[in-house]
Image (cartoon, rainbow, N blue to C red; front, side, top):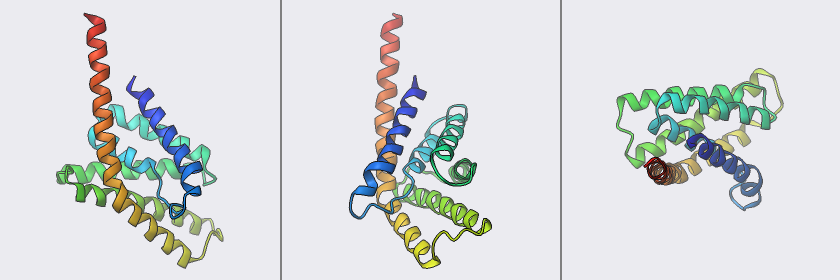
Length: 172
């Protein structure tokens, strides 16, 4: 049941990212909205629940984007590994630390995308434009990343409580 909720949230975020945000002024260079969802799953869900969803999200974005196949899957796996490593050394409940974790995920994704464009010798965009976009995405992540993580944690926590109460009432 919880996987259905994760799928609905991820599809909603993909639709928001691809259709709504590009049409709102000042949000044209927004970061990948699935990164906070990935970080939430990595921090607050067990590996047997989060890791399959990391693969699902990576494959979904690889199929929807025009990037080389496997780029998003690789990015999301590196974010998963990095967040797990950070969480093993630091307490990640602090909102300031959450902001930097989201910024780190955005930075990892941008490094891998720009690196793959350079390896493929693609005339993707001038370096000045790439730097401006990365800085813009990092600023957006710094401001909205912790809000999204806290919102996901609270909303999904309430949904899980409601679902478990419904199952308990149904079984008794």
